[in-house]
Length: 270
Image (cartoon, rainbow, N blue to C red; front, side, top):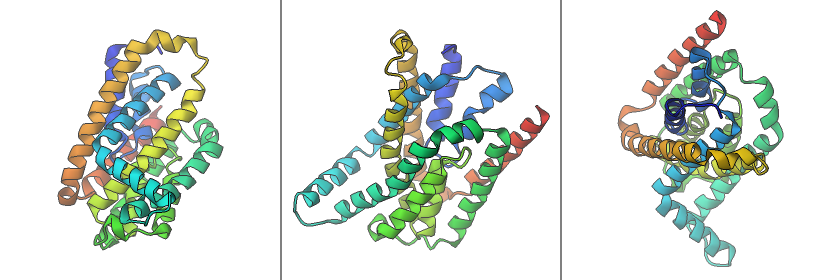
C-alpha cells in the first residue's frame, strides 16, 4: 500500500462520505487514480475503510440493531412475533439477493465492469430512477408497513448495486420509495441493510488477507483509515437522516448527473 497520509486521508474521507449517500462510492474512488494518477489503494485499504463505515452505521443504529436482534431471537425461540421481529426477517430476506450476487458475480464485475463509461452510464441512469421514484412514491408508509415482498424487491435492487456506479444506498432508497416509504424510512432501511452487506463483504475480502504478512506492518496507516472513514461516515448518516425529509433527493440526483458527465468527458479525454 504505497500511499501517503494525505492520500490515505482523502480516500478515507471519500469512502466515508460516499458509502451511505446515494451518490456511488465506486464512481468517486476511481477519481483520484484518473485525475491524479494515484496508485491503486489495494484490497487491504478497501477492507480497512469498509470496516470503518461498518463501525459507524452499527454505532449510529446500535439501539435499533439490538432491538431487532433480540426480537428476532425471541421469535425463533417460540415467543410471539412483533413488528421488530418482522422487520428483522425482512432485512434477512432483503440481504439474500445481494449476498448471492456478490458471491458469484463479484470477480466478474471487478474485472470487466469498472470502466469510466460504465460508471458514468450507471451513475446517470440510476440518478434519474432515484428522482422518478421520489416523484411518484406516495411517501406515506413507515417501516412497519413493509412486508416480505417489499423486502425481496429492495433486496433485488440491492443486488444491482454490484454494478459499479449504481450506488448501493441510492438503489435501495429508490426501491424503498417505490414501496411508498417516506424518505426518512427509505434511508433508514437502506442503512440497516448496509450492516449485513458490508459485514459480509468485509469477511469475504478478509479471507484474501489472512496469509498476507504485510498487513501487520501496515497496522498504523490502516487503523488511521478506519478511524477517518468511520468518523466521516457517522457524520454523513447523522446529517442525512436529519435533512432528507426537507431537502429531498433532487440535490443528489443533480450531483450524480454532473458526476456522470464529468466521468464521461474524463474517460473520453484520456
